[in-house]
Length: 599
Image (cartoon, rainbow, N blue to C red):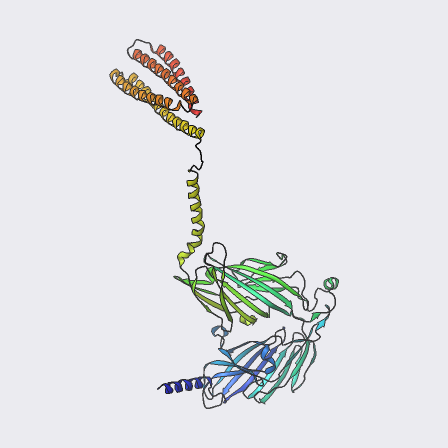
């Protein structure tokens, strides 16, 4: 039974991976070789026909042995469909043969049955395929390059009809191979073919020697830093080492010649970087500081940054700079409960026809993130072990996902995804780390200022504190006494109105008893403070004497009121004597206030 299971599995693998492709032919191939930039690109439109007896699900694309190490990207789509409605077909590099080259297996969208045809468009990008010839030039010379290619479509299948069109950057071709016939040149275009009934794996060689003054920029190292914050921001910073990979500058650099001829052929004076449309707080700086010669242009679907180095770049010259920006997190970070998904570009558009030889991307996730899963774009990348990054108020560190890739082109600008779990209540971890210690510090200060750490007793300080406590009570008693005198005045006014002598005497007697209690309290405070401050005791005695005078004047006012009510004193005389008594009362109250205010 076990042997039978192994046999079934083996048969299935053989059937899936080795479907019969001997019946396939290339009925028509139109190949465009774009040599405008420093990265040769091939667009191959191939019509595939199955003339065999069995269906197949795969198509093998071959790369010639001499170009195996130069291929940085292979992509394929079904021709004729709306490109916006379809994605690239799945491609896997199978084997590399020293004699036949590299094989890229393209998975067709459906089985290609016997007699059926399908049209594919295959895109291939090459790097380091151009040879600078000459390798060194002066700053005013034209840059010439040499490129060798196969005029035939290199395929494991027979090709019935094919044509290769080569596009040059200018119409200046120093030389080009004029075989196999037919060959035709028209301005910037050289056409090889059409050729018919080309056998499988046919190889030949053509050499093109032409002028190419377009920017030969190459990024030797790019470190991309993406820091995710759940407080609404994603920060991105790129540190870039760039060099001019064209023909090296021969001889010294002349600023005069450069200014005299601002269109200096192969020199790179500026280039444009494309950032997301929501990018803000953009900065561009190098080791010296901010580079103010850059310009930012906001467009509908992107932000275009014109990068202008501090000096023009000639062949072999290098520059180093940093470019950073912020984007709102709601455009790239999605969540459902505690489950989060970050979806961003792996790299940005650094410049047109970019070649990034080594790229390292570090994605810094919030502290306490867990269950981290990385889903790469539909091409191979290398994931390194996670790192830790510590910043303000971190305790266990923030997890850092590290990704590397070599030879990144414009076609690799695609999205990656990171899935992770983050408990929302941990958002308050850092604020509490800040608030908690401050609250504890304040509480400690409150306690410390109330403790006495002196070794010996400070009699003078304690005496002052006791005197102050006594005066606090004196002030309180004085307020009570003032209130009682006000009640006596109110009762006197009521007596003059209603002429109820009995009621007035009862109320007055009750208030005078309260005043006696206050006077006794003040006498006790005077005796208590005398040992600590004779001056304070004398002041309290002075208050008592003033109180006695105030009570005597209050009795005089009461007697005048009785005479007025009993018609024993005319009203004008009463008013005159009352006003004199009131003046004396005001003087006494002023002296009392002056004594109280000293403490």
